Image (cartoon, rainbow, N blue to C red; front, side, top):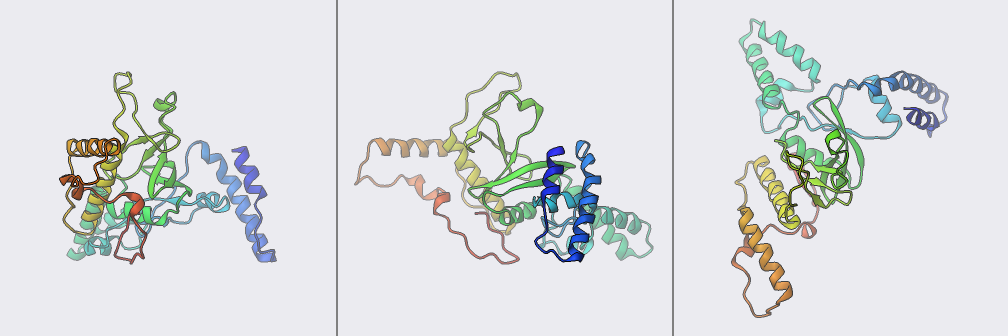
Length: 295
């Protein structure tokens, strides 16, 4: 906290006009008041319209002065007009108040709108939606360190080679040097653990004994398939053909065999056509408001 205080005091606005200087000094004063709360936690109030949309409170000044992006993934799906209408641009606190008010309203349309808003909060209790995950992946910049807010918890987040990872800070992994990052590619909590170089690793089993690590390439292919399925569901399309773990393992064995025993005139393996394109072969494209691209 002392180090953060020194960093904040060292910041200076580029504009030296008197008005901005006074505003900067006021922000510094407000930030110093907020800093002691870091030991117990900050209160932030999300808005459901964008991954960087929060109600502006004194707590947010800390992130602004230190130029640290603050994200969340709790967004309303634009393909659900009823939820968009019910939630609107309200913050979480405002939406809770609206639900309580609508429940006691005499107008049936208001009561219905309140029920839709309440159903949205219940169905997204994990505070992360498919649309939010897509927007988060598209919005975060490659190699950028930021803070991800979810379930009243702040996590360090980074985007590496198009994928999002959260820094593992759980006390249970304190002695596990091979567990540094946890992938963020699923809404239901299905994730993979990686080391400091973002290579897949495997945490110890429930009994405390280390288990054999999974085949890295197999796990990576599975992660890529999960991304494509989630993206297809987000767009309302039929999910692509997905290989089972056994089929993936056989395909990887075949590729490894071909590397050591090349046969120029040997036909391609029949399962090869079903494989997803390699991440390195994908190219970014322009994204419209209704489109979501996972790079």
